[in-house]
Image 1 (cartoon, one colour):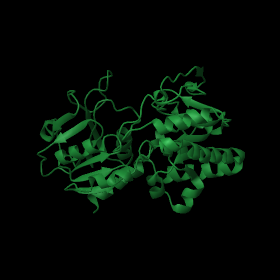
Image 2: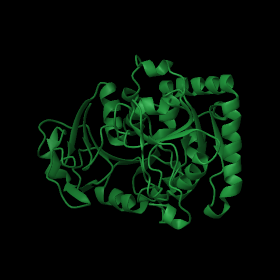
Image 3: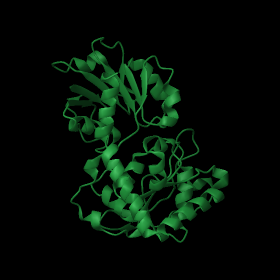
Image 4: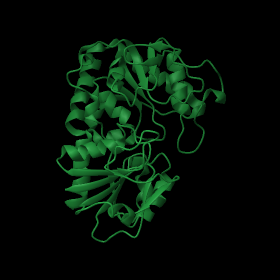
Length: 355
């Protein structure tokens, strides 16, 4: 098929939007990309459109008039690129929200405005928000990009250099990364500050780093050796950073299934995460229990109990190397066989064209 994928300004090389594009191409489809210039870097899209103030809104005809030949599917990918009707009746269109926890109500309005035939929601927790749309709504969890995990890399053979690794936004104010290794800059501790001023992000509806920041703050001051990497997520060294730790730590922002969860497993390290509904959805019950260990996501006023549970879980797995490696190996096999962006792209197309 010939598919037009549209996304907004600032899509990094390994974002969800670019992941689903890669998945569609891996299936053999002819994929055109469309979007405004990447922040300060020009555009690498097949069809460049002028940058507009947020939200970047484009009419169907404004885009389709730039393309010669038939398009089988128009797929809008978040963030920031929004279609407005009327939609040509011969066009099949879909919208894929991978991160509805980041402004779900706004995406809901844009889904109505775009008059899509299908809407795909990447987080199960937010699915009810979209069920009132006058269109077909589907649950499609995120995948991971296998290009980030080169099979011949020597890091597949390396032993962990620390207990716990984290790559991502900590939410902590004043983070400094004074250490350097062959992967990048990292910290082994977090700012020694107290109270709400500890957090650079958080305490605003729908997108709260406070819980993640508090747990990292405590982990780094415990008996565990930790590395928190800075600015490696969108680089070739990301895979190597995940391999540095025996355990990959994750704490969701608002019940979201982060790609980080799949990437930690894809890298062959043990994932420890708070309870995310989507993980239970995409892994069989017997497999889930042997693949990752859950701790209850804390309320901010009740961190002590939650941290004790997290600490106990981490300590157990650090004392049981053989069992930990077996579980991580099983998880790695599962995600590579069933949860790449190629698998997600096939599911998306089946839902649209094989009903």
